Image (tube, rainbow, N blue to C red; front, side, top):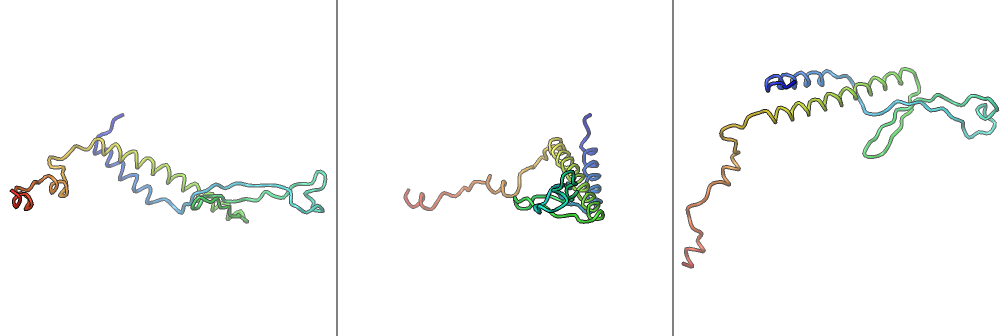
Length: 137
């Protein structure tokens, strides 16, 4: 379905409003780990003994480095999951915003005088001859 320019502009405004109403957000992934520790006498090394865990962590990238934060309580886990979910919504809305803007740019007609003041300056040519030419002539 092809939408008109005014429909696309309205949709863009709607997206801006939805982005503005997002809650706290942050990138990352919440995951759990279980495993055995390095202590030979620990219960996790006994035959049939349960491993340690699950231990929940929030993992994300910052300046190209992977950072992992411990989530020690169920409240911390729930908070991180809400924030990551909001970030995913932000990513989807942002992509839709960019796509909508690209369509608006494609449909928007050129104005009669589309040149900027800088372009107008570049188009003017001087009627004066350079001094070097007039002196040498």
